[in-house]
Length: 173
Image (cartoon, rainbow, N blue to C red):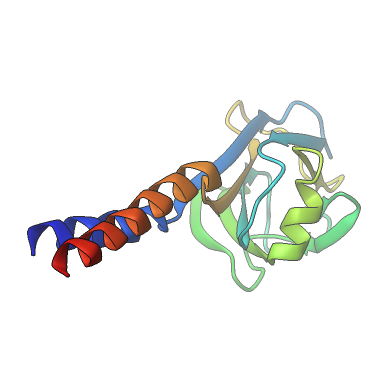
């Protein structure tokens, strides 16, 4: 019975996915800065993903020009993004017009696979002309989270588990 449990446990663990993420952070130096985040990762991403963008800067609720736009490989994910955008979270106000917030964008498997086809995701965060570098802590940070399954390892563990099951079945006869 113990051997059967051990074999079944190795099958379950061999099929489990591992969380992975890619991250890049850049400090704002110029007014209305365009950040090009280069995320290097695996070519074969076999899952959906989440792109989290965290920014801190001169964002103001009533100023229409104090926001940013986001695109990845020419695909526009959002425009006029600010801390008042629906879905924004982790909002912190450090001082007047000094706000930090995050927002998530879901990427389905086909989009994520297309983006990572050359092992590089280029994410553009374009601070509008009204976002001034008011302090040394203003930044743009992107994090791409996804599940990765190491297929060669999974195949080896799954294969040995199947051989073990066959051996247990034959031994029981």
